[in-house]
Length: 293
Length: 278
Image (cartoon, each protein chain N blue to C red):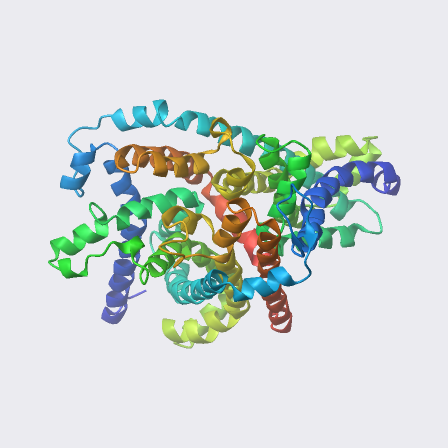
């Protein structure tokens, strides 16, 4: 037994192919990316070492700080949109209610659809001439509220957050339901016998016991919001006039449109640091609050 | 059990909320589907109703002038080859980490799982530079290889969880019968891990199928593009001919919806499992 499972050669055959790909195309690039972020380079002509100048310039760059601000707005907007709504749906569907499985399946569906297709779908919904929203406002006699939604500097980001919510509420809901299913049914049976109402059951059993997952979910929403790309790239391209620019779209623009690779790599490093911070934070929070059933 | 009036009012209220959100989820997609059969002028004059006729003109145009089938084919090639390699290699690693006996197995698992928190943006520029030097830019390999690497953390997380829980007796019996390690893995472990393999395969497939960033950066030739990039090309080309673009979006969405209806249990389980680890 140990001879078969401890054979060095077969272990190498099982592990090395994946590890080599992972090392060359994931681990090495991350290190190399940090190095590139200290260069001024177009990757063709000789590059110049400029130290932290890229980072200093980034924080002087109004478009980048705007993108950072938009990302933060995205984080806040997504948190407000996702957590309470997902919790509401999750709690309704977790209880024995007819059609629970059907509703879960439907609510989850948008998160499976390609972001580009979702973005285009909503570009049509928001369209100023034939889009559903303006037509609906026309029918109920509120033409004064009609807008060229995605071209409006003040509204565009908000419109995109709505789409993010449409796409991912079901996803977060299913995560929370999965957590609720781990709670032993006997808790609810005992509460039922004691005559506790559904609301009391939620408040004193469900909510406290899924709190750890809610915190993880919050971190997922935060890292997700930092990584959004497709929707903005398709719906507004970062416009109008950089009003919906995110770090990801600005990184793409700086790297692959204006060929400032060092500058672009620095944005990548900042995104990496932000993501790692939120994950480390979650691990810290999670460890201290682990619940045993 | 008797239901009080208060409870039945609540029940109705719950259904109202659920049905409202169901409509919110499905109506935009249904509207888009109906619009894909309309002509441009019909789209403006009659956005709500059914199309005058269910003609496939827009679909034909999306296929002939929009090259949507070519994009479709490219997406299939990239997603299928990346998924096959990723699933095979990650199940081998997971098996080695959970069942084989070597000192660094736990450390290796940690290194792979670390990848879960890394955003792809932190490796895009170096990958571009590497592929440029390797003359791989503008080939499907430039998209396939990074996707394989990126998919390992989630795949290994799900598979190692499954394989760690398998009973040891099967392997012991197999060793008694004189099986070597490859027979054990391919003839015993792989078949019984089928459900987690399907989960990993489907979730990886969806991630790759939907991805815009990598093909957008590493492919320049329009004949090599994947569906999501192809759709963005439509935007520029047909700025006024919306209905053709709508038909192209429908062609992109339909396969995902069919796969979802077919395998939604695996998909929901897999996407949530990968997420909860964080």
